Length: 279
Ligand code: AMP
Image (cartoon, rainbow, N blue to C red):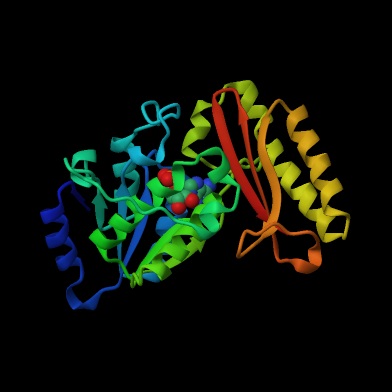
């Protein structure tokens, strides 16, 4: 497994991977890898002969008050896990390689990026994500790129971005990997204190309960009100819990207008967690 840190080396390494017309999959990550990321790698291996994993903690998607500095960085163990998974190439550029002096371009997505979910609480986030993902897709030129359903709005934004910019890469979503108690795996789970960790599975439990009630034709507004209360009782400060159309992310009034996705974001202590389920 090669670890590449500069663009000229990446270009040469990708040309070598492309020999004999091998298909290439890219799995973009910010490192601190867990089973969720590794499930994307395994899906990538089913969809392509060669797999590239990028590891880049992208400064432009963090606001100044967010956790860029403290974001977990575990490159040595990430590298080991990826080698054990027989990944072909790790693309781990520096911030200077991605944003050299004079860098002056930003992709500001609209559509799903203005759904009033993550964008309402992290207004800088999707421009940072869209710009870095567009760069990664152009740099690596993969046939497919795998993104997790965990970041559901992000997956929609990137799918649209690839279509709108006529990128050749096919964007593929992958199911959420969870801990045994239901908590969605996340690099940020290491921030949780033992007590917060105990409370954290509430998010998924509430999402599932709400989904079951909505599927049983209970009124959406009342179901979500109850969900809101349960999450707050567990010690969270809720950013949102919303029922949206699974594809457009537009607000939805009833089951008939579905398919529905329930999405939640909430803070506990210093940690912000997100999750979602289909109805
Ligand atoms: P991150 O390193 O957090 O930026 O995530 C990199 C990719 O892994 C994104 O496409 C995420 O949606 C995906 N991902 C993160 N956590 C999970 C999870 N628990 N299950 C599936 N995919 C995940």
